[in-house]
Image 1 (cartoon, rainbow, N blue to C red):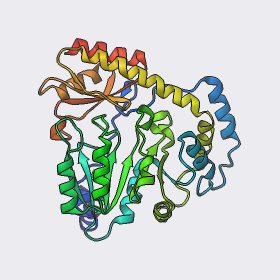
Image 2: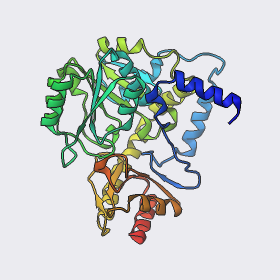
Image 3: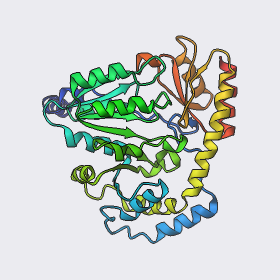
Image 4: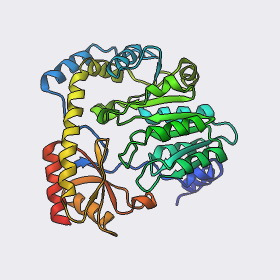
Length: 364
């Protein structure tokens, strides 16, 4: 190690918080040349005619100018496309991850805690660490539903400032019962965030809770409906909440190309809705076909992915075997005790799904 490197390392050790030094950066595996079934992306591309119209829109963008700081046209388009009542305000983020971070920043007083059921979305825990907040995880029930007794006990004991409930849940794919969700909201003295990243693939809708409870906001994204590359998330809530969270949003966080692309896509939202409907249909067949393979356990899903359990001790092995055959899925083995030997597989096109079924059939 050079003298410069050694000196830099000493500065890092002295200045960077120990819990940050112990973290690993969020890892995104290389996927070039692979059938990508690891990140819950929409497999369908736009028709050529639509792509041409989109490019024509981008050609008119004044790239030398800053974007609209509040992306008003995007907000209007999202409200219309997602049937969001005009009484609710919408805040945009650079993906849902930025919104999670802003929410944590807003409540990060000394001793403030974040609570979420697990297994769940890893960013809740990661953002808590970023913000030097205590993270409280509550085990899900045996069927991956919310354990009402454990949740209410944890809320009473820890009084979290922020509670995240993914509805439906990632990575288990299921919906939590509304009765238990409302019991959690009623018990909470803090803010409850309903994370609806997969709302396009379920009939469930949390927006009605905004009317009933003053301590609820709803988070959504356009990533799963075919716009993952835009990195656009949204937070829906009352004016009182959104005005305060907006103070933490960095200026111009939604860039001008994202705004132009989102405006265009939202004018053509019916195509994205049809693609989501196609994915839901494909999910049904994919679930049935995987369930017919001996040695696999497949969980029902309200999302665009399926959680699959393979034989004991084979999770990482099957993951690597699929990768060697050109298929990338998400290996969850080792991420949580309840996820031993599990793989999370994105629902793709029927051709993609058939290929995955065929390869798994051969491997197991």
